[in-house]
Image 1 (cartoon, rainbow, N blue to C red):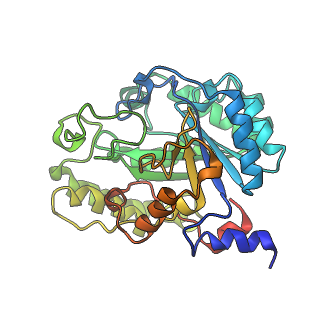
Image 2 (image 1 turned 90 degrees about the vertical axis):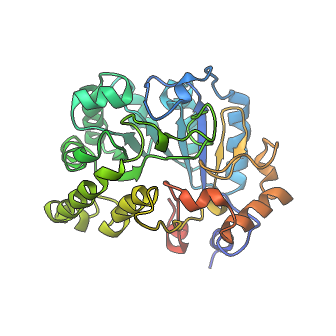
Length: 346
């Protein structure tokens, strides 16, 4: 077995990192959406400095990074994002773009040239609901951009955040996404209590969306039976899409969405998800701050990838692996990659 393969696999059995397969890069805090369930667009805009980018690219090459995920805010609002993507690809590091899709059509040429795959946030199947959730009237624009990018051969997937406002549209979101260029669709539950992901989301960490009456948080208890029945119908009506992988989650995994919401009311148990994100990836904030993942806070003041194996970071990886981090017990967005995926590459 090649030495680099041995190093990738060693990440899975030890808490000291020899490689960093995935880097999540927050290129900017700016965002041109006004999502009801995310506050990152409210913070003062800051773009990642290009000198910091150059340093990250060098470290990524040394750490044998396979893929970089450009995120934010809205990554395509960074004025130099194509140059950033090109720097990574020059070192055979694939580029994955996480986007709200508003600039897909306008920036299609740059995306087609510099991006290997994109994930588009798609939280509604109708213009009216899209505007309520995302704060802008842009569903048709996003879908048009998806078609342009997909027709050029870039892999397109969509990600839907399931919440009170849109859970009834899940079947239609699948149909709309696949009809407009998406190769696959994915779902996750709206986060109900983590203050670290997606901006300063709660004025007080003790005040969680579960206590609110708006439509952009978890389902109400009275809606659980309806949601459960909807999922069971979905497994039948879209059986072909589950079978061919166009719906990325299996029925078993989608049933976990129900368990997550039901557990808020003591109606079901929610088993902590399988995840090894801190062993295979890191999230780098716009100022260079390192986070183990979206949902865990910065562990060190270090802003240098060379410090990934500082004692406090090794301790963090050991703690979450031993299920000692409380944040992980309610995680809605686990990342797991096994040996085969690491050897084949993201």
